[in-house]
Image 1 (tube, helix red, strand yellow):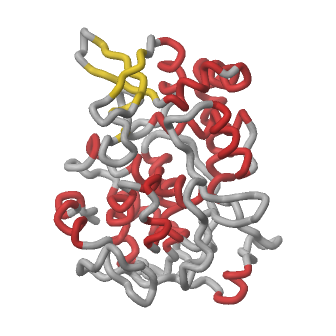
Image 2: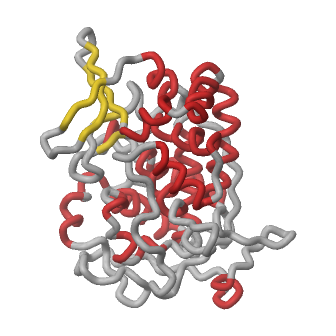
Length: 324
């Protein structure tokens, strides 16, 4: 077990677990980025609620939000790290895992500070509906991201996270990868948005997305309606074009905006100490590692109940468990 506050040791163990041959494209990296994204992306600037502080996905209301479908895999992958470093909060672990994953997959270094606490109950969880819906257009993107305090440039930069991972029809309803190498961070997402012809396709489940099929390689890539919207909106498109031709500028801007994302709602003093009310009252409260035995998925996964992600995941994740 590492010493309290030894985030370097945590970083090393996160990096070790990224290689998962039996999981998506052989890497847990993309789903860890999504976990960090979704844990922070519930923030509302007007009410100062939501955000990464608290690790609300430990509770059924937030963890069971349809927008978070599939993130149980990311949380399970990180349980061995939590076991090895029980002092770290889930709120810090989830955000740090996203940062490490991006860096390990060839992305930019991202500033990160610890100090987030874990909620002791589910009384402060944000409502559903705060995360982006990939089936919508540019107005929806602005409504979602302006609420968090982002501008148009930051919206496009954050969308560049679609360089990583893939969609699953049993989670988001969409299916496929955005780019040819979904475990390598790059600006290919923007280049493909502009250089390929994207045709609308209706999946068997009725969900509509955009695809490009390459007959030579017999591979199909996909884009969400929100991705295509970035090319159809004048303000958004100007940033897509910039990032498509300037990888260094994209990396620079993405580093800044992802760092901003995981700090949403976090208040710090001049020494970097988190001063949110929950932190002042409870300090650096690290929720205990969840039980290794399956529990009732209908129950809360808070500190008192402490079950795993539930029986349905026990077998499903057996092949995907992280190995340190």
